[in-house]
Length: 208
Image 1: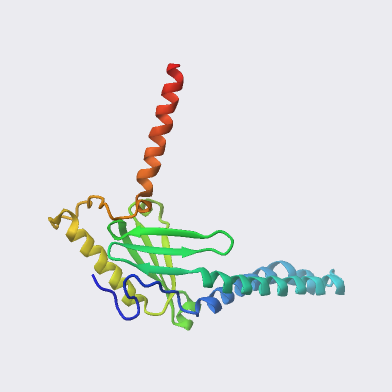
Image 2: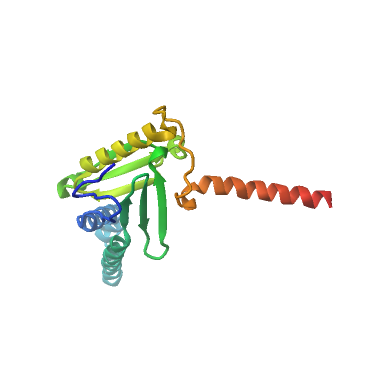
């Protein structure tokens, strides 16, 4: 399973820089809607004095500037990495989050593009896995990708290749855990083991 010129294997890649204006424009639209529904009627009726009017506008401007700065910092922390058997990702300004999504757990790959994203020429790939498919919530989103169709096809090919290689039978059964796969990719198993340990400790305490 090889990558492409845009998405090579084992090499981190970031979203398009269009992610920054996309996030900022969407935020400004939300702020403008709230301003029109809440603050604008008060200002038009004249009930607010000039000081309150200036204060409201100043607060809106400061919030937009702070969000723009945060968006830039957030973009700098984002990264994705394609491997032979899994997708790795990281992000977060104050709280850093990293994750691993094995290809054999992926169930859906949805391509999404809103009006602003269409204008900027970017798309988002929402990835659902076996553990999240019943919640209608993607486990991870690969955001602001310019060659989104190409990346989705690479992920599809990786999912099919992992399924056909499981057990060497081509039946799509779950692959056995390899010794060289990082144990972090078996987070569900760790949670189950923790629960079993807690139950055993409770039983031992009751016997005493």
